[in-house]
Image (tube, rainbow, N blue to C red; front, side, top):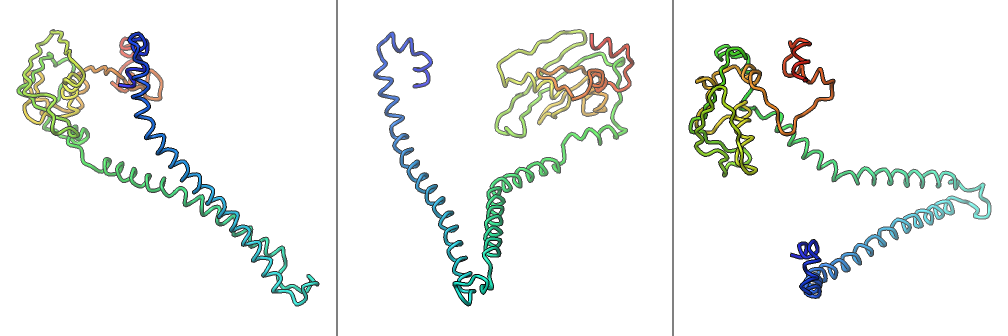
Length: 269
């Protein structure tokens, strides 16, 4: 409400409700401001105490270092009689300082190390999880039907297709979809975001398989078609295409490795 009032301040001003908005804003901000003051005071005291401890430790080390030197002297008025020299004390103190500093720096990375460990565990869990649609294994399956661009007529049929994404198992995107697209027909899928337009294309390319129902290409179940051939005969231009860090020629050849220069030029124009 406050955000709307600020964005439409001219309307609020025209109705003379500035004081009402300010009052409501004050009721929201003041409790937070009071709490922030207390938190700021606690943080300031904690920071000040931490700085005091650092310098107090320095002072204590120098003080006790002096006592060690003094206790090692047979005659306090003759420094040459001391078995412990000030240089050795300073070397030891600086070794302690730098060692503690590096240990503190290493410990400060503890939370980042823990986060990295959690992230790496999730990444490797995803990598090691077997995919339901293994493109490499399917391509090696000799029982799958081979197709070519020349042999395809272009009839697409969805028969009672139900689908839900693995991350949204409680919400079906497609609910009993029945649709037939005949060869040489142009069909536009329109609707609000999330209604299943991209899902339709993803399932046609077998990026996902339906939970229930079947999808056919020229009256052949796409599960029975060689996956490489299926994705090769269907031209797909996504809303946000991915461009690899290579030349335009290599990006075009990624779709058809054996394409000739003439074919590349035609597809580019």
